Image (cartoon, rainbow, N blue to C red):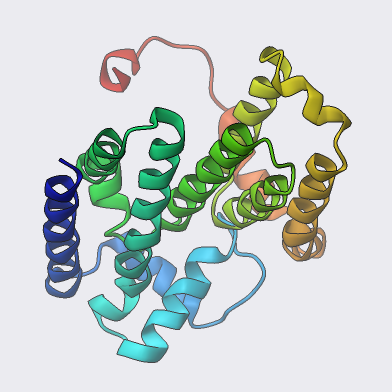
Length: 236
């Protein structure tokens, strides 16, 4: 039943908060904490969202492990809610929807990344909100939900470039699903796109003033590689 799944989720979230307070920072977390000392619209290797969230947490709880990780602990709640409600819309079954939210919290990715203060944390939360808004578009047929899709896409891109894959997935859905293609003719879809670009615009402006260094770093790593089966087993 849904109430059992939700009770287990509450226990998991409590344990995540305890670990956030008790465990020392990793090297990556300390690195992003240094960013937070100087809030800006961009940094060397990632967009700025994680620095802003760490800055907010340390303002309240000080320069402590819990202060650095506070945003992840707090944002675990809306992230779980987004998954729960998106699953309810898609599966039309509250018990299965709550179970989906439980499975979400049991994954290694979420257990680690909503606990650690890295760019993956706000990226994961934004992804959950993005999927919920898309589920609303599909379930209700109300084009106004594209505004939410655009906002969450923009926030996701301010967290980490991997949000581009979410946007590509949504575009594929629009192209491949015959019923979804109608949205290309809707003003709401394009308003969502404009909102996403508006949210990312200050970051892009900062990049233009700093030699596009974040793009050069991230996409340069892709260009430096080559096709190999070396990591296929590890990936699987």
